[in-house]
Amino acid sequence: MANTETKATTDDLAGLEAGLDALDAVEVRRSPVREILVEKALPPVLAVALVLALWQLLVSLGVTEENKLPPLTAVWDSLSDMWIKGTLLEVIWTSVSRGLLGFLLALAIGTPLGLLVARVKFVRAAIGPILQGLQSLPSVAWVPPAVLWFGLNDAMMFTVILLGAVPSIANGLVSGIDQVPPLFLRAGRTLGATGLRG
Image 1 (cartoon, rainbow, N blue to C red):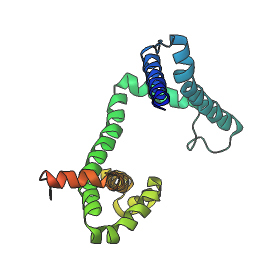
Image 2: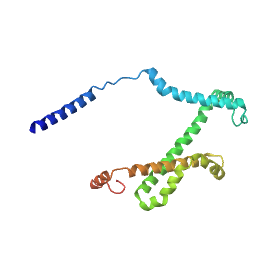
Image 3: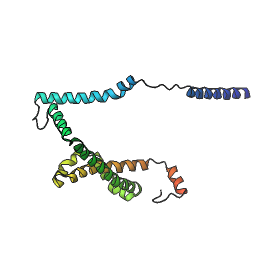
Image 4: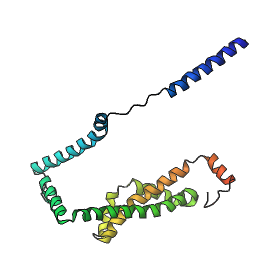
């Protein structure tokens, strides 16, 4: 009987060693540039080309007026003209800066809100469902009311960005806090991480 147990233990150890040796023997190969281009770069390029082709087809068929869907050549001419005048980068920066500032504001509002909802049961019961409902609403749905409330200006843009991003940030933080294992929370409290430190 002891012989059988020793043989089983030896077989287990041999299997473990073989598995560890197989891990050491894994050969790492670099992907060729052609493979990377085909798998990573080609699909987005094809998607953009398909959108441009569809755009040109709709313009050629005259589906809508030219001021609603301009031809690709008119868009290219406008971009070239702005580049020559030196205003293209300014226009791009205006959009990017609004997006960045709006996201930073959403982060500054959504983070404490998410922490509050995650930690205080009454606040979770009161605001949690509203945040989930707002997150499921597409941001573009806020454009008409924001235009009516503020007009076409920066306040309207920031309103749309905030109403789209704050619920997502807060709900993401709540979900992350909810998924912390209780053992880690108890260990943190044991080490003195209570209240704000927790």
